[in-house]
Length: 357
Image (cartoon, rainbow, N blue to C red; front, top):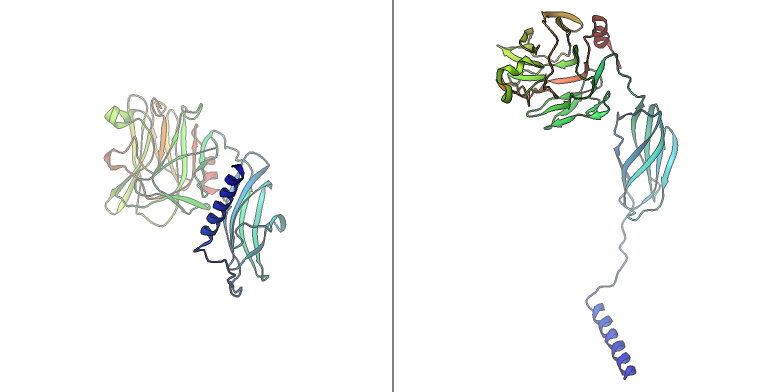
């Protein structure tokens, strides 16, 4: 009985095998044609001008790239500063290879990365990007916040990314790249770290004014108006712009606990394609505004800025806490934003205005 059983199973297997072969065309060779095109190479990281800024003197980088060919990729070589650091000669998909390679010996300085792809016919394509590793940033005396906007939104004193709302972009800046404002876009950052806010305060940055929309919020460390109404301005600091005909008034408002102080406008100017450097300092007795390193306005203060309940800063908009009076997102350009927990001196303002990198 067992023999009959096995014979039946064997016969059934043959029937199935024969049935499965029916209707399937045999695989035949297809000539891919002549190899006429050179490989195509793209590098997704690092991109041209990437800056790597970490505390370590030597760090790692993950190189991401794609190499493709119309017929077949033969080999790929990764070159750093003229020296091969990795090669690839085996590919599952012989026409397209998407690779990632971690290199662990990137030192401070300028670097040139090249991805070199060779096809079976010997044609070679090289894609090159320049990047640099920058030594760790050393904060200036009293500096609690520095946002250079060099292609990312990484704050270099607290060493973390700021929160970005909306879809702003980067563009050519006063120093390398800059933040380009967009509708409903702005940046926020917590001010709750120990020592971030003190009895004195300063902010300094490069600014290129866009007069559209007619009003905008530039910077704020404030309490929410929806909770405190007009008394919100008894605390914190606000920086704004408002139209005056075809020109714009730039002004500040700050609260000393039981009162608010206005310096508005400290400058009336027509929108232009010119960068200007703005610095505002506040001690317990005086607020001073500088434009391009020169004092343009001062105001007497009867006490320091009161930071009670001011737990967040916003940049390039009055939102979320200073959005009333139409102080919404600002489409202007921002670069090299520094914040201090002290009133910086004329000499320090001049140094920030004069810096070249």
